[in-house]
Length: 281
Image 1 (cartoon, rainbow, N blue to C red):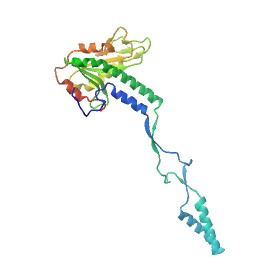
Image 2 (image 1 turned 30 degrees about the vertical axis):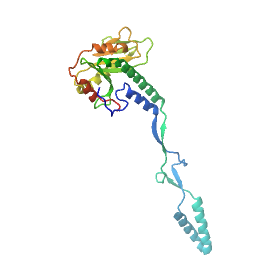
Image 3 (image 1 turned 90 degrees about the vertical axis):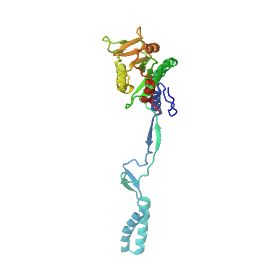
Image 4 (image 1 turned 120 degrees about the vertical axis):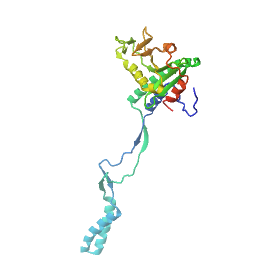
């Protein structure tokens, strides 16, 4: 595999984007917090300016001229002091000049976000375990790409395995919490997947959609597999559902080596590596 010194530490790491998403959820969110104002009403208290206080003093003090100019002066001075120091006007907040304030603060994650982070971590653990299993193929000439972005999409491919005989397989990893007494099985018509009382056909549909979305960029028609961790397969370690192999983890390597050749292009591995970059870079 071609080395690229400009890639981040996330390059070709199984489960990297899922771990990253879980970490973001656990960090909480940044929020701009504005401190509460002293006033509780819809108005802001402001004191009259010197000019307004002086104007009121002159108007009221002028009535003192009917008695004596000294009385008028004293009255004006008293009014000015009283108005400036004791009178408080109320103006709407929308018209008041309020100094901006506040600070950025990280709010803790909600219980729902923490539960969602646990689900992302569970999925990441499944991808990491699949990556560990696939690593035994590397000395045999296989190229394994992990956590790859589909061009023009926000979706990703968990793994792409390219074999030395021209095999190309898209692998989706699933990790589920076990249900006591439940086994993974095909529906009676053979076109669906069930786990206990749950319809799991959507996991097969999802990988089929991802393959269709990426097939044009691949230049080949890849095989598709889903490896499911954490569940009981019963007596059927490999199930074929809608053209997709659903595989128990311990059978993954064996089934990959049995996959047929889909291309004779020797450069297909380098093409797929360039075309499907790591989801996180």
